[in-house]
Length: 433
Image (cartoon, rainbow, N blue to C red; front, top):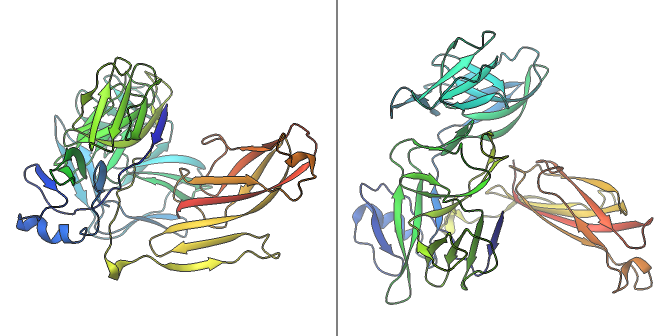
């Protein structure tokens, strides 16, 4: 699976309610009064397309003294029969404080007046119950979530969609790993929640400005991925689609040598295309690129789904700025960081490592998720050092999934010489936890 970006177009934000799809030209005045004020906030952005622009933050959580606090105003959806999803809004803060002596990663759902949780890998979906103790099951036939406790054959009660993945240690909540805002998944099913908005690339106008179609999901949309392996996902007003694609390109030139299936965002035309015949023919797609969904294969549960974040355009009064920083010194191991008001963080430092051995870097600022950018470079203290000759340059590898966490990552430095210590500089960029 691959994602390639060439001259990609910036994403933008237009926050407005749409009763119908509207085609907008970014370089022309907006005459619809509902949209005009919101469009003014993005007046400095001429390249806005193929992106999420708003994801409702319905679920607001925090940790307090080992308890998970569901904040007042949070909204959670409960499947309740064919095409029915009932929203539950918390009028007051609710403390989830009873976790027994459990430890591990768990999925949390709401049972109407109380919360329930099961081990993260005990969440299922399908037409038949899993027959597993202490599990959640999304019944795809009847559109209902059931909790099974000690008796795996009889449901104990109905539940909401899973709204969070957290870590607990000896009965105390220690980390919120994922909050399902805008999107959720259970077993092999993915859900898009109401109020998700995006800009579908729809060409250019006569002046060369981008034309985008705004959409908004008006209800919970379900996608059953039981027949899929890991896929790159796309989104429109009807929900998530995969199109059988496992390669995605953003470029001004047509991609080649990718196999049978691919989706290509033509940044020159501002059109999304799809091919299923190795690029012989390309068909237009009415959708935006959403992100990657990981599954081990057909019949396996979704293990990860991290949609792309909506791009937020700001005006001058909302300009981002550094609120906390650390300069690199000998005392702190030449570790530095810059934390911005928006939560964006840039951090880096030096790390010595024995060649051909894994070394862990611990981040001074924890990241929101593990999909942050890592840049590494072996230092070259002397051109006479045999490790750093132009013929024998060291390389740095870092796997995305096996060693990376929100607070650390591991790397290995290879050298044809071997047996020496190599100093590397590292830099990490992304949003802080």
